[in-house]
View: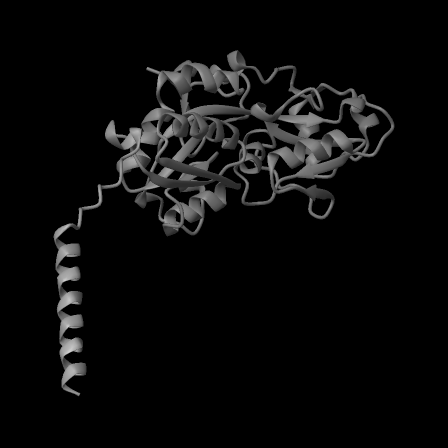
Length: 305
């Protein structure tokens, strides 16, 4: 028993010695290396924007460019319509609410809590399936089509073909703008139109549907559809700039309160020359600086001072 106790004591002493040596030889692990963007004072964070599909192509492309320059930042851009964007930013679900309409025009929110950042102007045009071959309508003809009083293209100089209306849902800013300025506020006929949630889907539906008519932001118009003049006035930048063509809207990026941090930096980038002088016209939008008039939430137009 004595001999076993002696050997146990020796083993314990040896174990203690090993632990002491290991502790003395322990080295501090090096701190994780920072990325290049962190070392250079780069930014980091996530920004979420939602709302207008008319504005979405511009915000998408600007976000891609911004993220390339600021690799620690992630920007998520969703559609859903202007009403949805305004509701979400008001509720705090997103940092930016994209909208074709003023927040004051949206029911169910306190617009005084939102800060407006106008980033550009967008024109909106009635568009038809190219086989309709009607490229000009009077304002009254357009109203009569969307209110269901005219149902065949032959009544406005087109083929003997049924008119198929493609509409946006009621939360859409594009629909609100078109109704206000192209239809003079007239209520569209109920139950006769197809409804599509997004501008891209509207374009495809019109292109694929014989006799179809709808409306799109100019940023979405391509050779698959035919834009229509109203009373002989084309939806061009020059005609929109002086309000000869009246179907246009500011594109707003709303924040709840004054923006800060990454959100402010991204909104500042939206107003940079890189976006305003390059992306905005390239994607079919109009810089606010090109406008010769101002328009308020009630639709009142005044010359720019």
